[in-house]
Amino acid sequence: MLTPEHYRTPGQYIQKLLDERGWTQRVLAIVLGVDETGLNKIITGKRPLDAGLSLSLSAIFDVPAETFLQLQKDYDLALARLVARPDPALADRARLFGGLPITEMVKRGWLPGVMDIKNVAELELAIHAFFGTSSTDEIHRVAHAAKKTDQDLPASVTQIAWLHRVRQIAKEMMVARFTEHSGIEALTALQQLLGNAEGVRKVPRILSDSGIRFVIVEALPGAKIDGVCTWLDDHSPVIGMSLRFDRIDNFWFVLRHEIEHVIRGHGKESAIIDAELEGDKAGVGGEVPEEERIANHAAAQFCVDQAALARFVAKKAPYFAERDIIGFARTMHVHPGLVAGQLQRQLGRYDKFRNHLVKIRSIVLPNVTSDGWGNVALEL
Image 1 (cartoon, helix red, strand yellow):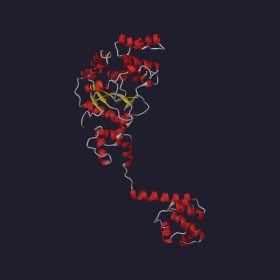
Image 2 (cartoon, one colour):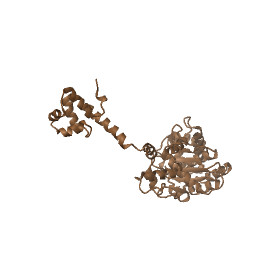
Image 3 (cartoon, rainbow, N blue to C red):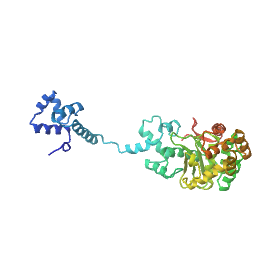
Image 4 (cartoon, helix red, strand yellow):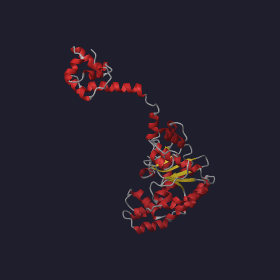
């Protein structure tokens, strides 16, 4: 016995039901109270069957209305496949455009020449020019190759776009030749700046003199990047930062974290992207990858001597008076914000000591090559 699945169109199935009853199309038209010519067009597949008529047919033939509608849907889709022939590049474009904040990239001048984001061909060419690629797969291969603080997940294309912008800017910079010795000397000079928020002004020059390209690029929406260590070649390290958190403690912790990667030669094979460098990811627990534990320890120790901090906590806990924090900071020759930041990490109380976490973005940006916050670092 033939079932509805054996018929290509609802019209063919209706004709079968008519034949079983010995009815003509005219009889059915009279029963339905519809024009015979219009019914004929439905049965011959020249006009689609609608939901209302499906309900009427269901009442006459005792067949679920959904059966007629499913046949119509399947037929329409099969016909569309023959006629429309979808562009095989659609899936590739979806992969390319779906993960990128296109509007933001255009707004920030990363895709020059793109005036209308609805012009798909123009946009596609601009994106591949930005990444220096010819296919979407190349971009995704870079994303999977990049190391992240969370080693189990590849970088997102948004994070790779941010990283690529950092590298674009860094390639245009003229700096001294980097050596491990020059990196260590830079650390000694940077250590002298920790006592005053204004000291961040001198950071770009010190890093440049040591051979480290230092770039600040405003984070893209959803990227959650704090910093990156990447290399243009074996003697050209690059540190990129986003200043996602405009706080003195975060600035110095992330910067020192990335400098440790540079000094140890981390990230030469593939860039190390440090995303959400906070909480447990900024610690030295066993769940943190070894390279990150090393960099986190160096960063924390740079901000405040950890042994001295432990003694301070043991002596003053659970109550930390303002005068005690300020006094300890003076003893350590660091800004109170660095002590406050490390206390927050140690105690897990990020709601405390906030008055010491001063903003530094407005201090450092005039002295560093930066992109974002209304500024375009360079025209491509």
